[in-house]
Image 1 (cartoon, rainbow, N blue to C red):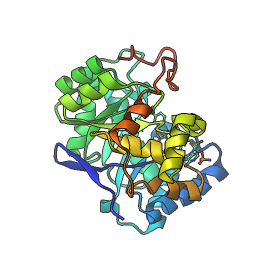
Image 2: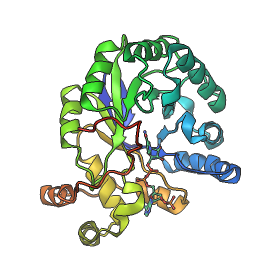
Image 3: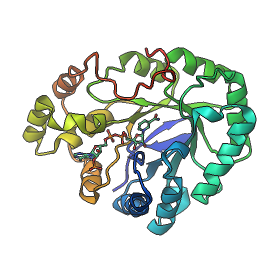
Length: 281
Ligand SMILES: NC(=O)c1ccc[n+]([C@@H]2O[C@H](COP(=O)([O-])OP(=O)(O)OC[C@H]3O[C@@H](n4cnc5c(N)ncnc54)[C@H](OP(=O)(O)O)[C@@H]3O)[C@@H](O)[C@H]2O)c1
């Protein structure tokens, strides 16, 4: 099974990824290395990690254990918001590559905007340098609002191709998605299952029963059918890893898509750290 890609700025990004945050202690990390290898063996080709998750070592080990050639994998990592000064960012990129035991990532993201107000021009120049040095093939930002995304594009000497934000049926991202499409960016959807909160939803449950699919599959299919949107679900369960990949044999009608869009609610946002989150659109 080949996962379709979203193509922009000359890069093809697999339209479904595998998330690796919140894995906890060392034994879980070891297990997670195994889960990353399992995900790749199942057919995932897009892995999302970050320095902040403490999963980079396990992800690198998982990639090597999988036997899947490195150039068939789209790998993302992120520089944390404390390290957005030019020297810090350069050091953290090297640290991430050391953790991964790899010589490049496919996508390097700024994880959150800087609460310390490091000038964005400085951060973007440092990000661009990582690309010119071959340490990151592509660049992007996470948790930026539209104005910040436009500033990042303007200030970065190399192309910005991706924005990573929270997106699931309980969170309306209509405005951001319109901007993402206008700017020709990919939008990676994090917490695509609402960190598990969507699983008991009765409306999606009804659609899932009618389709002979699970709620998670219907929600991920809802993401998949939206241009530019790339969900990156996480699961520590091999059965659910396979379940979340099995979304390419059915489609949702326009009416079903609309019913799921209508689930958005004002308090739907999960990741909203005080002092770090921008003014969301
Ligand atoms: N850029 C950022 O600031 C940011 C923030 C948050 C997340 N992320 C990225 O996005 C990824 C995904 O987000 P997330 O991990 O927070 O949330 P998520 O993928 O929406 O949800 C993960 C939760 O859903 C459960 N789950 C997964 N598949 C399931 C299924 N088929 N049926 C029932 N439950 C299922 C998992 O439990 P089990 O493990 O038990 O299956 C886990 O508790 C992260 O891992 C990370 O890579 C980025």
